[in-house]
Amino acid sequence: MAKRKTKSSKNWIPKNLKKGSFTAYCKKKGYKGVTQACIEEGKKSKNPKTRKRAVLAQTFRKMNKKKK
Image (cartoon, rainbow, N blue to C red; front, side):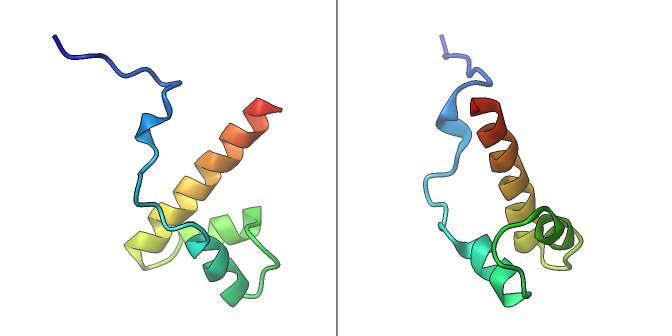
């Protein structure tokens, strides 16, 4: 029988995640770091990888707010 994954499980986070790649994108665009404006701009990007990173950054931001 397979184990069921729960939503609270942190196993969904990719192991090969490049840390700082979206931060570098935001700084290159002129932002001081990952801001909500940068996330919105990233979600409208033509590059699919950048769009995915923006969505992931938004998800991590939501997770961080829930912890507090």
